[in-house]
Image (cartoon, rainbow, N blue to C red; front, side, top):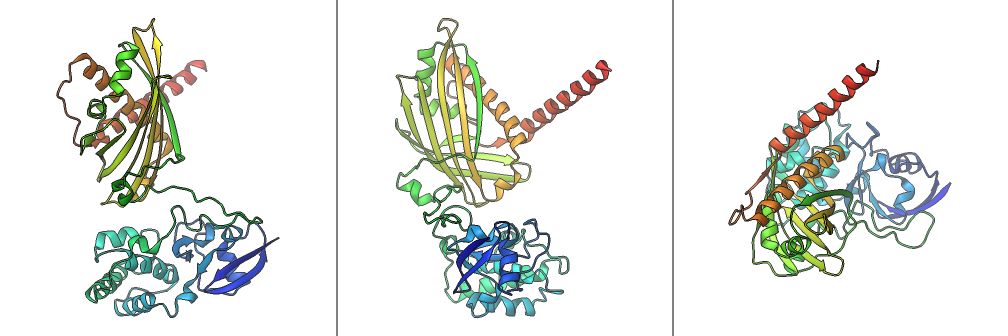
Amino acid sequence: MNTIALQINRRAVEASAEPRTSLADFVRDRLDLTGTHLGCEHGVCGACTVLLDGVPARSCITYAAACQGADVTTIEGLDDDEVTTELRAAFTREHALQCGYCTPGMLVSARDLVLRLPDADEQRIRVGLSGNLCRCTGYVGIVRAVQSVIEARRARNIAPLADGGRTILGPAGSGRAAPGGSEPRPARTVSAPAPDSVARGIIPDFTPATVLDQSFTLAHPLAKVFAMFDDIAGVASCLPGVSLTGIPSSERVEGEFRVRLGPISAAFQGAARVERDPATLSGRILGIGTDQRSHSATQGEIRYRLLPLEGGAATVVELSIGYTLTGLLAQVGRPGLVRDLAKRLVAEFAANLDRHMSGASSGRAAPAELSFRSVASDVLRARLARMFSRVTGKSGAE
């Protein structure tokens, strides 16, 4: 058993719990705060949503022991909250509840939207509530209720809070003390820095959530290829979907990366820090960017190293591509698909580099937007081919 000390609804609480006890079970069974409901117990339905350090979090998949020292607010702790009071009235007025089982978690998530959104945009409200499932209402009344509260507060000149009052990066509760220890756990940087950080020229180091290793060969001498990587504008023109928005320097570049995945399109605007090491014929490009439309953020790192081939007549380019993606677009990324797409995109980048260095692509601009439709179809065909070969190979063996 662990002794857990934390703030629950502005009250200091200390109680014992097993390491496997979820925060939802902790507040319900140990503290009798049964307004937090349990539905799927897989973090999908949102009925168990509470505020963890002011941020909506799924209490059914959050260990209570991981909340040591945290500030937790359940629906009971929002009885006197101004925004929640307005939302309760709006939910009643717009018939936004029936059985009421999802309502506590729905109110917690809706409160966060009222605090953050600058206006009552229906699409953004629906996206913001997409993690809270309701089997009764059809959501129409819920959306209208949230819209009415936002409109009323903005009409009273109550401005939205930047990031809903969030003060730390990372998932809800990050940076808190580790269970059983007194040292704070370092916050995980899973979100790209805000645009003002880009404006100030701050491009910090980070640990990528996903790293992909790729390599390709160019039929050009080592020195020529290394000099090519020093031509930032030339390299950018070879990257599908990338365009520069400013004059690059030897150490910094600002630009935009446009991508479309089915009906979803994004334009990541940001900057990159460029590092080179002539002694080892290697370098690093570290970038950050945000897409305002989807509220997604990314951090990326490309490390490259050049190796001679065929007595120096050709060059092997070894790449290590790391990235962290958060927000709406992070929900559509799957490691296997991303890995296959990365292979296809690196191959396209290599072909563009070869054409550029051969003089065939002089003056050629990078595509304005990268569409995954053709790339995905190539990936699908490749996967089907591998599946077919395995099946036919197995049949032949039999």
